[in-house]
Length: 188
Length: 188
Image (tube, rainbow over all chains, first blue to last red; front, side):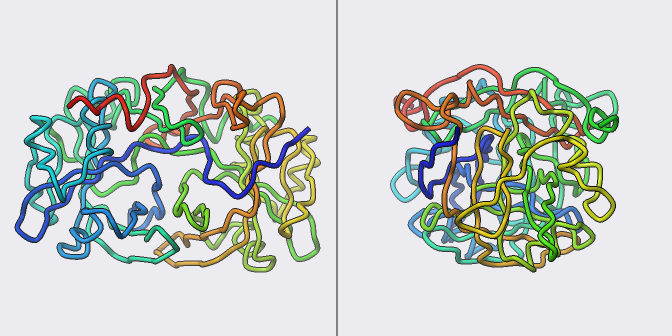
């Protein structure tokens, strides 16, 4: 029996994207977005949705660039801090000791210590309501060498990304392998 | 040391959204979208990105409606089948034995057996490239009563949603609780 719980924003999973930008004086900033995901395969694009009140919102419009950085579980405290403080008042890289690296492809910094990063050029900004959806074209994906599979792709079990649970605002890890897609259901 | 792996579509996690629609003859269909996520808090909106070649693409434009259905791990085979077959050739509800329930709020079916569903009215369609991003306004969220927390929200540990790993096209479960957001990083 299903119960109606209203028009709220709950899906499982939502990501923990750390968004890297520069402000107009080229000070690096990082914030957390759980509203986002891949939105096109060709060209490769990813979307994030931000409130206009965030420091990152103005930074993206200024530089037309952002990075998506996927933190490992080990960086849960730094990541949560990125999601609670504002770049308007604090230098979040100085506070955490994490290292912004200037992208050579877009005008935004990525985070050296995080294992998987996407460098994105802003393609579209769509005002939806409280949030504006920014679509970024992925110019490159960079992965720590220790985090690659033998086939040369990012290994989810080595990277240990986090999941955000919007129902009670908690972080979860990735669990066990369940099956191969485009395969396990073929016999239906 | 980071290695460049090119402009590809890999982030962790991506969701396993089963998208419910009716075609112009009101035949229910379900497909899987891993490109999507919440995109606005007010009004509550969710986005999914689809190729024009899919049956669902035309259905959404015809009915201006879709549902997002979150399967439990137990439905991995049915879910994967929804992602491999096309509604152009097959009646996927008949094949799986799952039950389409007509939404009273939008012109789309949700899946009775899946524990968490969102009923969405299409607000915007943004052509990005190979994929078009559809933004749907959430009209209601419905949850199986057994899947609720004591506080009345969907319980991720009861629902056991799946995660899609686009790097090697596999499904994973949700792992362990790691910490509270807007809290664990406050001492940084």
